[in-house]
Length: 279
Image (cartoon, rainbow, N blue to C red; front, side, top):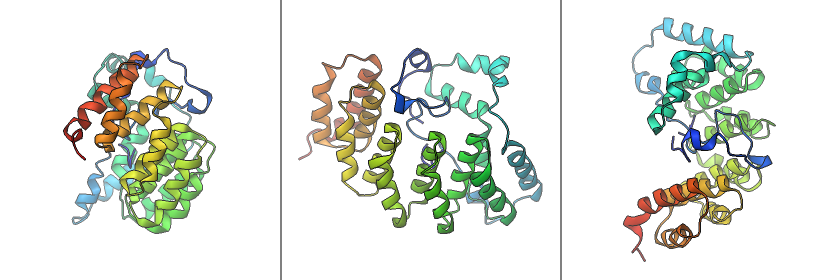
C-alpha cells in the first residue's frame, strides 16, 4: 500500500515458505516479504483536473461496499491463473501475484486521492467499521492520498488496532500524508509498536522525514537474532545510509549465516557503494 509503501522483496517466496517467524512477526500473507508497500500510482490524483466519469466511481463504490465485510478469499489460490503466477520468482512476478490476489490493492489504486464526497464517506466507513482487514487497510491508504488532515485522528486510532495489517496501513497512511503533523505518531510507532516489522518501517520513515533517531532504531536491529528483523533493518540501512553504514554492513557479510540476509546485505552494499568513501 504506501502509501508507502510501496515493493522490494526480502527473499523469494519459495525461500520464505518454510521459514518460521518469531511471535511478534507473524503477519498475514499480504504483508510477509513486502518491505515496501507496493507502489500505488493514484491515477485519479493526476486526473482531477478533468471530470472523472461517474460510472467509474459508482463501480468502485460497489466493489468497496461488497468487500467491507467479506471474509478473506482463499478460492483464488485454486485458480489456475493464480497458480501460474505463484510460480514466478522475480520481483515483478511477486508484485503481479499480489496485485491480482488482493483486491484491496486494486481498490486502493482506484480510490486513492478521491475528492468525491460519497466515495470519501464510504472509505471512511470501511476504514472504521469494515470487518475485512485488507479492505480496511486499503481504505486507510486511499484516504491518505487526499492529504486531508481531518483524517489524521482516523489514522492515529488505527495505529492502536490489534491487527498488524491495519496498523501497518495506518503507519503507511501517515507517511503518505507527509505532513509535519504526523512526525510524532510515526516516531511513536517506531519506538513502541508490538511488531518489530512495524517499528522498523516506522524508523525508516522517521529517518526519511529528517529525524536521525530513526537511524538509531535501525542500527539497534541490524544484528538482531531473528533473520527477518535483521534483513528488514539492513534493507533500510542500505537505502538510507552512507559511508558509516557501508562499513558496518561490510563487516557483517562474512559472518552472516542466513542466505536471505546475505542477499539483503549484498544488495544494501551495492546501493551504499557510491557513498562508501564519503567523510
